[in-house]
Image (tube, rainbow, N blue to C red):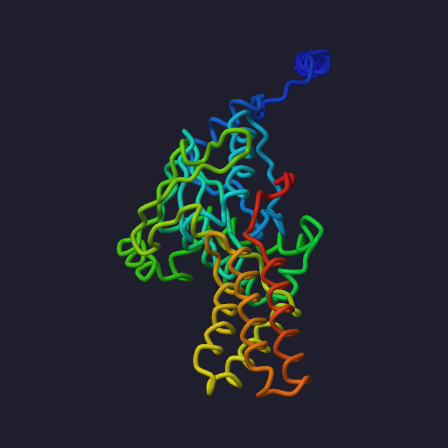
Length: 325
């Protein structure tokens, strides 16, 4: 008996040790497979904050996906950033398996990339949340004076946290109310951008007009002007002062009001109209030479020249630089 037990122990010592636990197999997923997997899922992939007037990227989320589709969408991001000033404030661009949604407000646009099956209500609710937080954190002066791309990169932390929440619908059920956003999208749906409107020949913007519910018609004849500088605001106030002083002259007050209009709004032949208006101011002051002293004449002519210069300096927004967004 003891001999049999000893023989069994010796046999078990000679056998190799076997790992009887469960075997875990880790599949090797390529970039293309990972990209197609993310398409099948409903999720937000990236987001950016861009200045409307020149397409300067102010902040952006970190893009972990580097598939072929993502690289193509980055090109669409660049094209859209150059045309933000000519597009409605709420738009959607469908690019195959992905959608690009954005909203614009107070000179800043909030853009996101998501899969095609991501709900529209959640997408624009996500953008609305980014907008509220950005406006609360940064004032317009900082936004307008920014010269370096991604100068508000610290905002990426909030973008990442919000993106994680919106990619997990269970965490949203008790934190946001989607009924207001659903009603807003139903009453004013986002404008669907076509590839024909997005593309342009040799970087020249085509003179297309857009029928958009709630946004009116947008064409090349109704462009936005560059933001007013401090000197421009001073010139505008002085022109209003001249118009108030010239109320008793009747027609003479119209010239100053016309200068104010040309400073605020973009029209055809705007520079020519401003120089003609300044010439009319000079002629009227020559006519009133006997009724005013030299200081009064000097003040009105100088203000007219100053406002004309500011009108000439404040031009329509042109083509945006090629920032890497």
